[in-house]
Image (cartoon, protein in one colour):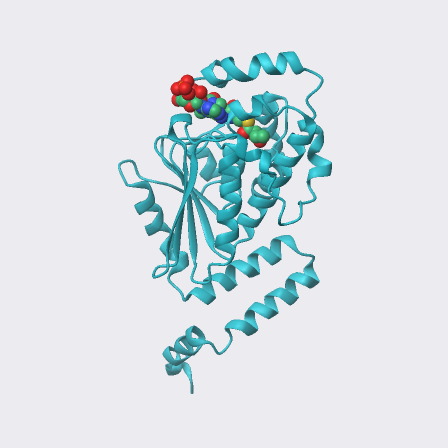
Length: 305
Ligand SMILES: CC[C@@H](C(=O)O)C(=O)SCCNC(=O)CCNC(=O)[C@H](O)C(C)(C)COP(=O)(O)OP(=O)(O)OC[C@H]1O[C@@H](n2cnc3c(N)ncnc32)[C@H](O)[C@@H]1OP(=O)(O)O
């Protein structure tokens, strides 16, 4: 169904936007909300927008966690309650020392169609817009920085905030029925969850401008071609199982090595060069002479003359 024909837009957003035209300051928050709030700010008003859940399973033996957006009646739209849960889960994953990898997925036929528009309808003032934006910036930035190799397994639409969420993982894999759409400009806003910045770094300035300004649909083939997605999951495969198998090329090694590699890449993309180099050296020292290193060196003994 075309975006602007969707029942949810007709029912909720259009009347509200018409009524509040000129009052909505969500789009002006970009410069101020970039500063993350202190760690302990949870914006408890978000919990009033209930419904849905974010589920997490962690397997210590394999080091794989699976995060599931679980609000299938609304195609996994993210309620305020789910935002708070997501924040808690990211904090939990930060402390998970046995972790190597994370799959982010949606339950059922959708990845995520963004924020719950019923909630958006009730929070069109600039203070709430800024706080929600700020909370989600921090949560998704921290998700992006986790020392885990993360992948969004997209099986259905990833729209608006859902498109932003899938840029917060290291990789994206898509089924044939998946698509990604940055519809924010069509809704009179810009990305509010950090996805504009991440998309620009992923696909470059010209492509990001094209995708963000037009709000057009990105099909899996194009997503792979422009480097937004890494793989198209063959039709008929179980999505989590196929994604888990795909991830193994990155997670075969020991936990501390997998995590160190991710830390080096996060530093390399986010820190000034001198700090990134220092961080890389720190990670190197942490794994040098460790079990994985010793084992690999012993295996290469035949090269020693
Ligand atoms: C600040 C956050 C902001 C951002 O940064 O981008 C946002 O995320 S705003 C949200 C942007 N998202 C959208 O505009 C997507 C809206 N949804 C759709 O366009 C369509 O639902 C769809 C995703 C293309 C799927 O269409 P279709 O397959 O035809 O299903 P339905 O439209 O019938 O949806 C089924 C069911 O789900 C409800 N739904 C869908 N999306 C949302 C949503 N974002 N919030 C709340 N509810 C949503 C929809 O209303 C239907 O419910 P029922 O009518 O009760 O069955």
